[in-house]
Length: 425
Ligand SMILES: *Cc1c(COP(=O)(O)O)cnc(C)c1O
Image (cartoon, rainbow, N blue to C red; front, side):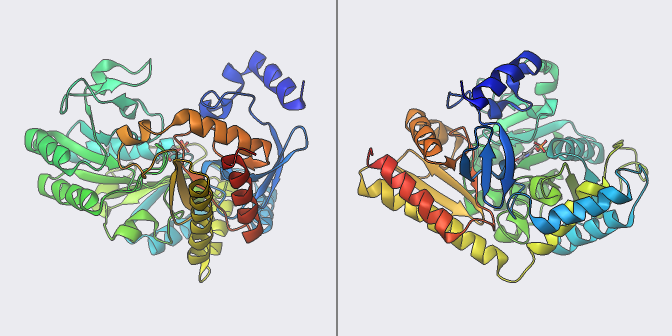
């Protein structure tokens, strides 16, 4: 047995499925998950000492790469001054100010400890602010594991949702309507029918949890108009896209201001941190100013805030996103050409430092189109790349991430590995 196999079997005796978050278990692709012992820049090393070029980056946070020296130093300094106070600190103000400066729709911001917590709080706030219960989400978007959002579409269009997880009361799921991504007409119909009951529409402005699906420009515009018209709160869940697709996140790319936004991943620089914020009149409804309760023992944790501050400052360097986007484009273009050369049905695209690869002729625009991609072809590709030292997300339904630490040589090595795989070598 390899060391990874030994650890996986030991983990399963004490941890459900051997993992603390399900995708890590490799269930989708099969095989043994790699247990990592360390990371540096673009690379990770597993328990058997094998090095991989990493395109997961802890599922998005590590935009500067693994163990980035300035981030590590800032966290070490913060740790030496105290791990947690449960009282306000100056660094939290600085982080909130930076977030407001970068993303103009944020008038007030609150820090929490995860993306799930940010979204859960934003939903409660939207309901408390509007006095309405109904939520609209879109199939294939993931917003963390709060009960109200673990909901899939009911049997017909515009029927209320069903739980997508055991343990979520059907009574609760009934308050969530799950519509098709990129379907502006479906959204307009839902507002026609339920407009005065809709508390909020929550969307990944660029969907990154069903592989990568880009929004049609009119989809986000229509959503903004309908929410304004009907007094519903528009929530952009930028936990993944925040400071990953551009300096002002997805809302900056598309020039649309949501009422509330949620963040996580990059804003914590690899430590547990989330944030939500937006319009002042809405945010003022949160305790202690208003009647919507929300709290956290470790909220604004000094170590997480230190890591987030370094990350946000470094990605503001001139040309940072241009370079990251160019590198990511070079990767997907290289993969596309390699597939084309060997007659493999494949497509790929990127936005900022985020990419999607699809075993399909065209890039998908909806959940159904993502589901129609050749999953078995992806699984074979995943394992063949893994064997060549390339660590892709272990599922056909996840986006990929490039960091500032990836070099042109890393990209070239990845494309060469893919070409060998596509050639059947
Ligand atoms: C990752 C993610 C979440 C959940 O964040 P956690 O920190 O894992 O709780 C929510 N929304 C989106 C869009 C995400 O990508």
